[in-house]
Length: 155
Image (cartoon, rainbow, N blue to C red; front, side, top):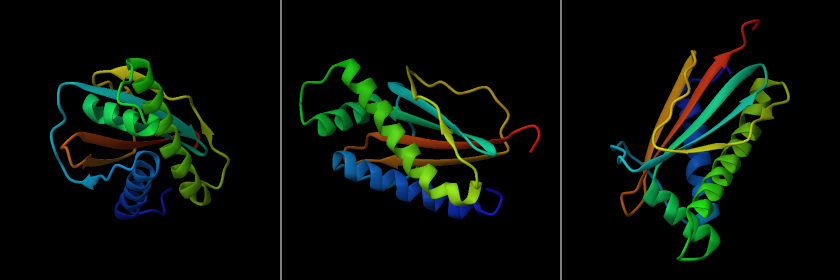
């Protein structure tokens, strides 16, 4: 991972995020800074190889509802539908990132199961690298994607 510049990492994350969102839900995202609303959810997932990477998605609930409606092709969705779709969304994003980053990690990666929580929840751990990208859709619903990298103590 040390061979990637911050700009290269941002480019990979940006391409994966925009491509996955468009492919899964036909939602166009624009990379733009914004302030998240107070009504948001957090989805976290980790993958490990010769380092540990945490991907956190902080999203306005309105974005996740719209994502779920598009994925399920239903206007009426439940809180459980939203949670399941948000977890699958991050799972797909992490799968694409694993494919993109595997040649750089040179070690099989293990994905954790995604976790979902209402509100903003951060993981309390020391990181050596962090990358944040903000997105909005045409309705101004926001999403923040955060990648945090921690090296294993023996690395």
